[in-house]
Length: 154
Image 1 (cartoon, rainbow, N blue to C red):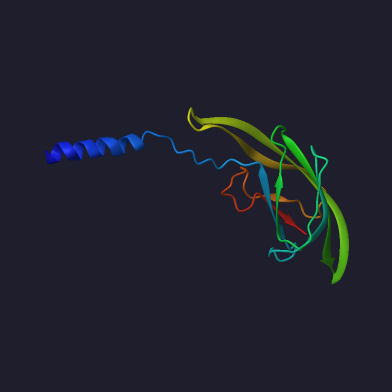
Image 2 (cartoon, one colour; image 1 turned 180 degrees about the vertical axis):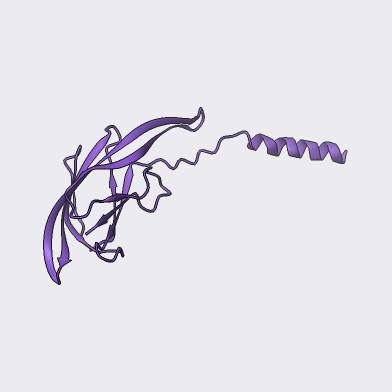
């Protein structure tokens, strides 16, 4: 009788293992870290405007930040960001305007019939940039687990 009861409990618990894990890490958010060009440490900047291709919205920042999280166009293979920001150069405040264009591949992955599909953005690359130092891709897949995708040295 004990073996029969234990067998039923094991059978019931094992049915839970057949359900897929619906944890999706896909995102269309690009994570940008701002670094000091000379030291490589975190650099603060105040963005007066950020324009993103594919949308008419303009984003503003009211605080100096060391990182940005910006959306890429999920239906395109490239997005351009135009930044107007304040930084310090030779101990003097400077207003700069720079842009960066990123390219990426879009994949639709069906996780399971019950979980549905997710859109993954991979093969992230910088195709054009006007920054003095070329931005560096540190993680080429957009993911909720990524701490940074691109480092920009100001």
